[in-house]
Picture 1 (tube, rainbow, N blue to C red):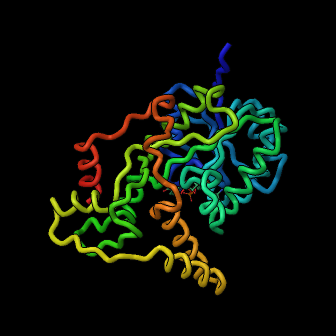
Picture 2 (tube, rainbow, N blue to C red; picture 1 turned 60 degrees about the vertical axis):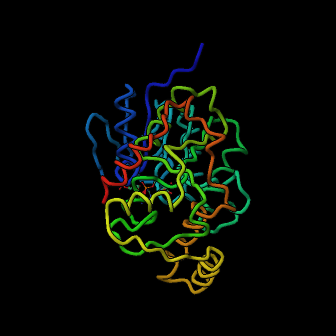
Length: 291
Ligand SMILES: NC(=O)c1ccc[n+]([C@@H]2O[C@H](COP(=O)([O-])OP(=O)(O)OC[C@H]3O[C@@H](n4cnc5c(N)ncnc54)[C@H](OP(=O)(O)O)[C@@H]3O)[C@@H](O)[C@H]2O)c1
């Protein structure tokens, strides 16, 4: 008989991605408990306040849960979550990944910003006590637009990274959340592997074409991704307040440089996980909605 999960715990539930994941899980009928450090709550969920440095605290919060979804930003701390989930008898773990193709591309794996995600995936692969699934979705489409990464939506100059005609997989937060639900509804098919999803794949020039239709301007400044990478390593060496910029440089390269393999239009699990690609009209509406 197919495995059926009912109870799902979500860590890091109130950030950029978490609330959408929780909303989709609740809508799909899962019994959701959110874990937080300060007693945060979300509608239609139970909540547990946890001390992430205490295994006891984590095990107590996770006991009785079928699955555990992590959205925490400090990826390096996830092996402790995995140990606690195993001790609590949780059956399936979805780590806080939701971005670049970390173990599917050696150039991505080598970027310092992904050390924690890489270590988490290696930790998961080395054990057999809990099932796991990694979700890889590229840049969040709506978030990437609202952050001005994909285009300058006010018509000002856009930085284009590498070849502006190369397409990149992009995924709406709501589709990432659908993938989480899809994985937990299809644990056998998604067990112990990476699943790739996308709402669409677009080049920066395609996005800029839409921007130019609605706003005057739309000039571009070409950014050499090799220089961006070099700058990242120099800033990392300097340390201090520059580390954040360095990490952001690495993320930009991983999601927007062709060599980092971030287009899985030909190889994705949209159909299994219930994700439908956006139409041209929907893409335009999405871009206009954040202008
Ligand atoms: N593909 C993309 O474009 C993209 C963009 C952004 C993020 N991501 C990925 O998506 C995942 C979720 O990121 P996010 O931006 O949603 O995270 P976030 O907003 O930075 O944090 C999520 C939540 O985690 C908890 N948290 C924060 N710091 C913590 C710490 N030190 N220890 C434990 N919990 C902590 C907080 O909840 P409480 O206060 O309730 O504990 C916070 O609201 C990450 O893996 C990230 O790399 C991908």
